[in-house]
Image (tube, rainbow, N blue to C red; front, side):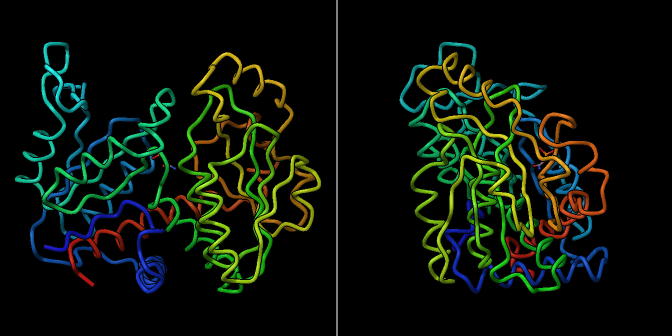
Length: 334
Ligand code: CP
């Protein structure tokens, strides 16, 4: 059986990406309820916290006439063992392979949020844990943010941008701006935002201090998308210069790869750049985007978030529409 997992969009062809974008915008323009009469159950497994993904997925499922339930391992649900071939004589009661195998027998689809560990580079870089879930599932699995990718966010972001510019997107300047944060956050959102903007045919600039480069494989893939539109990805360590002439400034904090080797050194490096914040003077005519949650006064000035240029709430709304279209695909409703 061809299971329509969604791990990341780069594994899907352009026709699928385009069709999903169109369906997402269709749902934005034509909100409707109970689109399907076949009762389905959706299991939403959250190894990490969420506001938007959890609630928008619950509403998306309900709008399709499905029944969502949220499963939080470690909170009233057995703690999971991830290692294969180990003797499970510690605290973990259930192996992920049995857990996903069992849940596949109850649910018609699974959504899984499983962030990077931030401590085990190989595990995160290879998406080892998420791949175990994909291997163990016998129903479609939707990635609700893994170590490297956040495809639900990416589809919502792409639809937001297309809607905001009324499809006049090609060649517009998209600045992915690093911002300081008290913690070394993972790369899933910046990776997915970069790939999304390059695939849309925007001219992408990454503004980030030295030491905060994104993964070279992701950059290479983004460059491939950009080249198809005749562009190259620019990088700058000067936030003011990078933001000049932007059509979109997409702010995001992420940690240095150094965190895997030396967390204290990473923090010392990151703390040198506390002034990196999106401010009103960066905007010009640009729209401001952020995946949320956002720390006001840290990532971005209040004056930006409270301005008419900020489209972060529309962006959040599109999470709902994008996930309806993702569920439709998973369940062959389109
Ligand atoms: N952007 C996003 O995924 O939000 P949550 O972490 O609240 O789900």
